Picture (cartoon, rainbow, N blue to C red):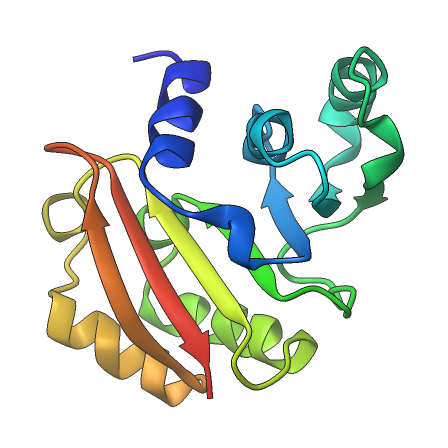
Length: 166
């Protein structure tokens, strides 16, 4: 399945209208652009690598909502910007193991306020591609001040894991 199709499925299955400003951390095709096409009033911060900056810039510049985007060079290990109420990241569980995952989640937690949301979108069923059970994931989340509020199974592979900052 193409990245654009995956992004469309995610936007079809989650209500982003409840948020004002979304932080996305990405190293691939931006989900935020797909969200912005449906939710024109939302503001976005995209933290991305230098390698994809020009590609994302060009894609945003071709849209009527380009003023709603702020692009920042960085990664999940850097100090993250503040002032958003939803953070979105794809394939976090698949790419990082427990100790590193906990450090990353703690970094998110530092930049977020109580009741902000974190969406972890897994394009493959994380219980099959990692050694994590859902209970283990809940414990890691609790240890970094998050609680699992919903696990939306979009299809056999894609999960939208919704958490809230405690």
